[in-house]
Length: 283
Image (cartoon, rainbow, N blue to C red; front, side, top):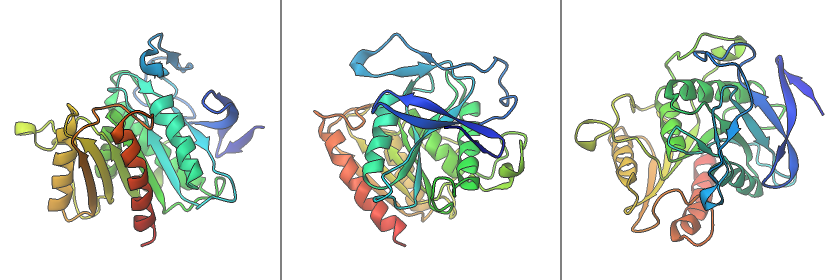
């Protein structure tokens, strides 16, 4: 099935994780801002270590829509940002698998394929554009445009925070009327975030500006994660800015576990997020 959303073609794509067809929305109707390469499908890396599907060389960013069963649907959307060091996207472990879990809770998930490798400016443009497209077309997916959050892992957690603190920045030329909409997330979830402590003496990364309008955040990480300080620094900045924040910091778990079994951290964070969402969205 094909249909149109303000000039964007929604075309069917196969989700290898559950074997069903999903709608893919491409973000940029013409030229991708700042992108010189032609649009083409992502490259799947030959590296499948850890049973992870890795995508790279993304020149035509977009997102894949995962809708919950109608009997469970809460009318709330969550954009999922996989990690991968801004070099690749761990698209199944930190994307499709997360979306499928969110669907069981009744949330509509949008798995973002942002630009990589080494295109952090482009990645921010991509997530801002995604938030605006989802808001504009919220009726198609039966969600509340004012209950739209972002969930990110590792570098995707970095991108989530950048979207949550830089939403007033005009990072690309307006494409159409959608770009007049707010790109501020209504809530943000960070799971083992990285790159948030690039300031002096491992303080908050300077580009991240926390203020009273920064959305509430949930943060989960572990002490044995090499990037664990990012979670602590971010939580401190939010606390100082009087922004609602919930931080969970386990002693062990490492980095990059997603939802997969065999890791105490992977087992711990999902019910905590589920409970936090119930509380934050009931306000």
